[in-house]
Image 1 (spheres, rainbow, N blue to C red):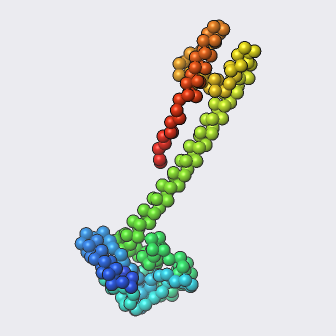
Image 2 (tube, rainbow, N blue to C red):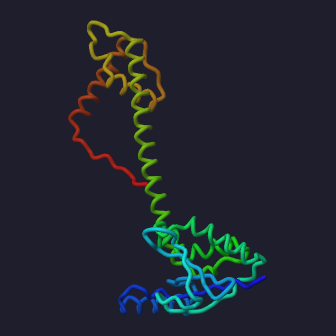
Image 3 (tube, rainbow, N blue to C red):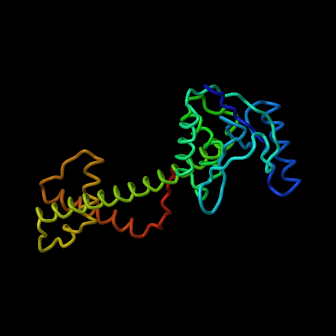
Length: 248
């Protein structure tokens, strides 16, 4: 049985003193002041004086080691004992070899696959608790924000497609209704507008809204058609209005 030690650094490798000082202030306020997190690098020490972590490189594995607490790229902060593992050293070396293959340097991502994610994975395989939540909270929050934005965009695209599809189905349904009404009631010689799809659609709309049935008398039909023609003429002369819509 041996202890698993987590080493925490402030990320101060930007190459700009101003940026590095800003990060130190962020960590001081958000971690030391209110305890919610900061911008940190982490590494795991087990068996020996080396610590193991993960970083970006164009070729080969991103898994690397250096003397524990001595990474020259960052500013050392603290060490945390995560627990103890029962794995012997040869088993730990096997785990590190597996992770070296699974974590190539080019796959590094600041939000979704950084050094803290690697240490979480290593600790899980060693059978000890993962990193404290504050170590990688900023990356988790950023990754969640990106995921939420992508999900929202996907839902909007899906909703837009469903609206267009529903509109097409509704149009075809109404077109089929007007076509069937036209076929069932052939035009008479003196009534050439009775089979018009617009007239039939208007009649169908009026029928639904009024809840009435068409009269069987010729006088009632004539009166009804005159009313529909006037309604059609009014629709044709009315100015077009923009259609309102709601974003999802």
